[in-house]
Amino acid sequence: MKINKLLNLACLSGALIFGSCSDDDDTILIPDTQFEVPATYVFERNGESTVSFSGQSTRIAMSEEIVSALINETLTEEVLLDMFAHVEGANDFSDASLNASDKSVRSKTAASRDYFSSNTTIGDAIRVEFDSWIKSQVAEVFTNWTTPATEGVAGFIEEGGADPATRYVNAKGLEFNQAFGKSLIGALMTDQALNNYLGTLVLDEADNRTNNDNGVVADGKNYTTMEHKWDEAYGYLYGASADPANPNATIGADDNFLNKYIGRVENDKDGDFTGIAADIYNAFKLGRAAIVAKEYDIRDTQAAIIREKISEVIGIRAVYYLQQGKNALEASTIDYASAFHDLSEGYGFIYSLQFTRNPGTDAPYFTRAEVQGFIDQLMGGTNGLWNVTPETLQSISEAIAAKFNFTVEQAGS
Image 1 (cartoon, rainbow, N blue to C red):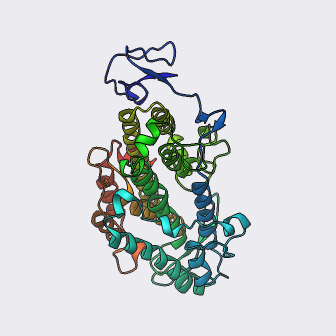
Image 2 (image 1 turned 90 degrees about the horizontal axis):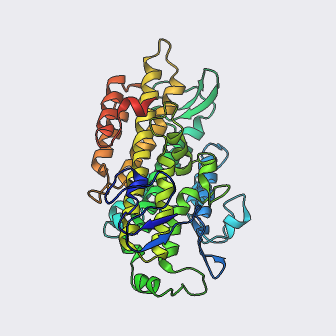
Image 3 (image 1 turned 90 degrees about the vertical axis):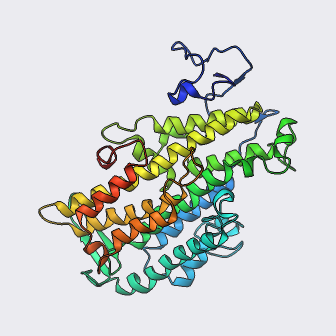
């Protein structure tokens, strides 16, 4: 596909800015310099791939093991904290390659250049919150693993329905493993992709633009530093994909983080968000091709599209889980385990809202204070989720949807 540098993906994103789009092929015909966009995310130099995001694949794999470990009641606080803050060579994971890695999940949590380089106090506080969820899981939930959960008492609770399951909650009904995992989608994957690697502070740092203009590759590598930074953002979405060059073939099935929930939103049963996966992927692909073509305005326009669409995914899933929890609480026979499971996932997606990025303001769609306000409403009763009302869940849902281009009804089904 050929893209004209003036168009900036306008036709692909559905907002025509210049000229018109042809229905006959993928070539956008506007007189000016054009550049090629590959059919899949394949970019080469001298016949060899220039795409690399192994660090992101590693952190996704580490995150999977950490979240799974949070429901292994035989593990200690020390073991779990060590997994989160892994150091090279420590025997923290089942995979030897992860143990050998110098990467860790904690070091990149709430650590983006744009949001936290000048606000390290908040980044530190967020990492401490993740630590506290691990500690509370051990201290409150593991110690009550065989205790039936009741109002104000941590323990297990049985979920009924067609797919029964046992859930493990604290005294306020919160599943820490779900809150941790879904919050990590924002604090790690979303924050690093949107607010670090797609930001001009990283992409254009030092001599990156000059080197990219002149085809100067990173030391010992086949890619320019700018190319690599863009690919690292890509890796937080597709780093575990069966075919990273064509990830939408299995979108939603490749990890339990951003990839999974892009797939869930794409495949919403009512079709309200069909096409969002293609919008995100196409923007990544065009932005990367624009870097090769040295068309940085187009690159930055695609970054804005990605920020908007991924932020929308976070907002949609926050509302979805709040609405599912509301439905469970309004049922004639309340299945508290089902309600608490949905609301614990909703808690994590609400927490993740503070890492979203509104391309119109370059700030989160919701501030940390606003997010904390939602969480206080959700958990603020004497016994937290045991006391939250459907009216409160509806109110939070409406407040979230109002910042985005979807309705509560669209997101909640």
